[in-house]
Length: 261
Image 1: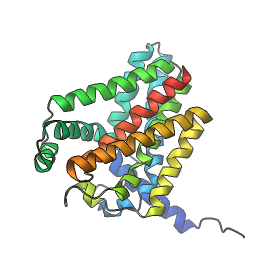
Image 2 (image 1 turned 90 degrees about the horizontal axis):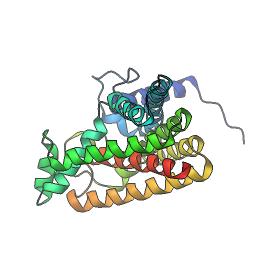
Image 3 (image 1 turned 45 degrees about the horizontal axis):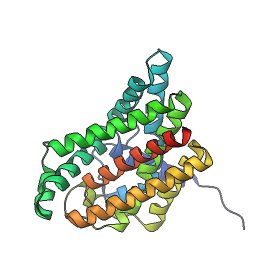
Image 4 (image 1 turned 90 degrees about the vertical axis):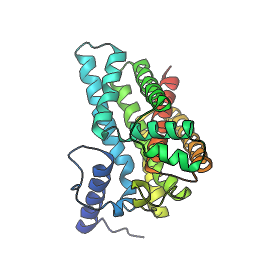
């Protein structure tokens, strides 16, 4: 059966959806205008792993440049992690800190959600960021090669975002307002396309068995964290999605370092 090539209108729509996803997930000059509504974000969710690929490349370029200038592996890795945080506006790190504070300090669902909405960070949130940055940087430093570090960054950022649309389908919004609820519920085709793209990028960036190990480990972490969010606050918020993304990043980078060693 003959398959017609994508039409110009399809390509333009895919590009617009990629820009919408990039505008929401990063501060890179790829995104849509900030005045655009985020309602169609669920429709653009298939592009999440492609946005992650771009963010990973940013970190890889910074690491390679630092290594070329003679910076040792660990500080070069910290610079790479910092570059990815700058590229995203620390969106996911902020979510991780809020979830750690809320889940760790709240006595019930309402209090947990209230703490998560508080802009201030407590001890749990600070520790979560310290461990997230530390684990990612040391995993990258263990790879100690610009090509392998870039591959790990691309794989981690693509897959961690690729699973998020499935989380949006699996969980209910924990509150009726906020960015998480406003993003909408992706169609099954978009959610699975996002996960599939993330998986393909991981398998391409890492070697086959290393990619499979990272994929399985990240999937397990995403499922576990989703179940914790369901028990703690009844579903997802934007902060929960950020925390799950961070869990995926850490897991894939650790898996890449473990497999390489």
